[in-house]
Amino acid sequence: MADIIVSLRSTPSCDRCRELESQQCLKGNILYLTDRLEKCKEEFFKAMNALINGVGGHVIVHANNVRFLGTFDQQVDKKLKELLHDSSYFHENFSRKLIIDQHHVLFKVKVRSGNRGLSTLKFNTTESLNAGRGDPTQRQMQRWIENIISEPSSDDEDDTDSDNGVDCPVFERDVEVTSSGMPFLENLCIQAKDINFGPKNKGKTDALRKGYDQGRIEKLTKHFWDVFGLPEYITAFSKIATGGSVYFGVEEDTKHREFKCNGFRLTENDRREMKRSIERKVCDTMLWVGLSPPKNPVIVKFPTVITREADWYVVEVKVNYYHGIAFHKERGPDAYTCNRGQVEQIEVPKWISKYGGCVNLCKQMPQFM
Image 1 (cartoon, rainbow, N blue to C red):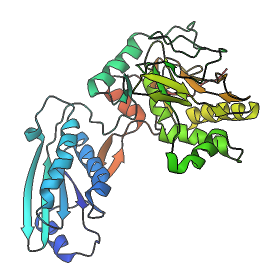
Image 2: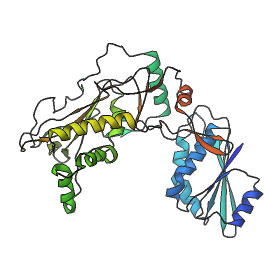
Image 3: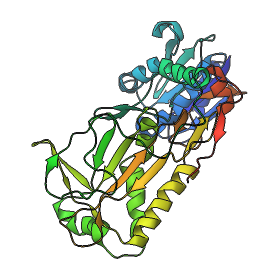
Image 4: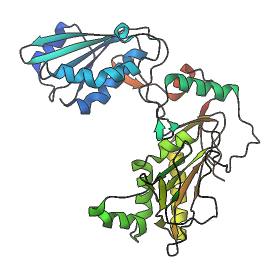
C-alpha cells in the first residue's frame, strides 16, 4: 500500500509530528500545507483519489486540536463518498484512526484497495440544466463515451448552424431585437448573462459596456469566459443534439419573467476582435476529444439592439452539437493515481480507455470555416 502524508500545519519543523509519523511506520510524500482546511482540501482529495485508483494506502492528517476533526468530517465526507464510483459503501472503503499526543493531533485515513472502476475527482465537463449546468455522474460519462463509439456521426452532417429546437430563442440571425422587456425564458438550450457591478460601480459597468479604453474587448471576453463560465456552457450545450446559445448583454427580470436587452457598444473591429478571441480560447484553453474534429463548435453572432444608437449589439455564442466530449480545461478530466508516493494525473488516453473508449477516440483540434 502507498502512503501519502497531508500536513495541516503551517511549518514542516515539528519534530514531534515527525516522530508520530515514524511510529505509524509510514513513509511517503509529505505535503506541507496551511492549517486552513479550505486551502488544503484540493491536495487532500487529490491524495485520496490517487489511492482509490491505486492499490489503497493511508493518508495522515495533522490538526491543531481535536475539535478540528468534526469540521473536517463535515467538509470532506460527502466528497469522499462521491469519489466511490463502484457500488461499495463508504465504510468498506475508508476507516480512520485518531492519534492524540499533547498538542499534536493526527488521524490516519485508510483507503482500501481493489476499488472497481476509475474514480474521477473532477470531470471538467458539464451537462445542461434548466437552471444552468451541472456535473455529470460516472455512469453518464460512460454512457456518453459508449454512444460516441457505437453511433459515429455522419460525415455529411451540417455543423455550420442549427436551431435550438426548445422554445425557439427570441434572437434570430440578422434580426434586430428591441431593448424593451420581452418574454424570454432560460431553459436547457438558452442562457442569458449581463454585466452589472452594482450601483456603486456603475462607472466600471459602463466602461465595459460602452467605453473606448484600449483592451476593453479583451477584458469583456475574459469576463464572459472566467466570470460567466462560458466554457462550461459550451461543454454542456455541445452534448445536446440541437445545441444551445448563451446571450451576453441580456438582463433577466426574474420578477416579471422577461429579459431586457442592454447590449454593448461594439464597432465592426470590436466584433471582429471578439469573435477571434472567443474562437482562439475554444481552441487553446479547452480540450476536444472525439473521432473527428469539431466543425464550427461555436458561432459568434451579434444581434442588433434597435433602440440604441449605432453599434449596439447583444453577443450570442451559439454552440453546436459535437459527437465527442468537450472539456473546459485543456488538461481534461482530473483523475489521479499514486506512483511511488507521488500523486500523478492520469493521462487522457488512459482515462478514456478506462471508460470504455478506444484508441481512435483522441484529442481533436476545432475547425472554424
